[in-house]
Image 1 (cartoon, helix red, strand yellow):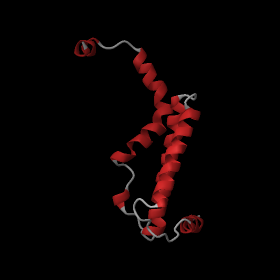
Image 2: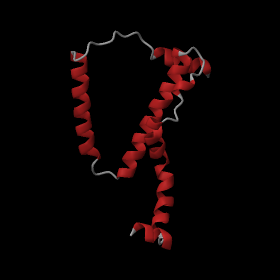
Image 3: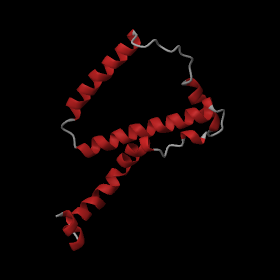
Image 4: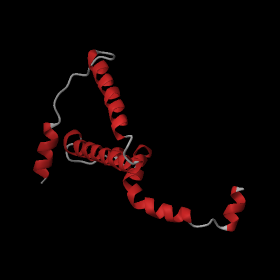
Length: 124
């Protein structure tokens, strides 16, 4: 299994020249990103927000797994660098989005219960 994963990440590790700032590469990808965001926003506006949130979290988790695998197999030569440990502040939206379908029902039940008297006093 290790060989398969290493070959997968080696296939993604092609050499690339760094594009110049504000070159046609940046303009083309920026324009494509903005257009795809507008198109997806229009298409997904009818769907429930919880489904979109969960799908976005799945995409973030897949990209995090790819990043961790790439760093382990290609960049650091099969050694794990703890500097890239995924439990950081920027990873919180991914974990919250993945846990949302499970926590949604629990949180909804909590919100349906009446507030304790002390909490009601502090709110008002």
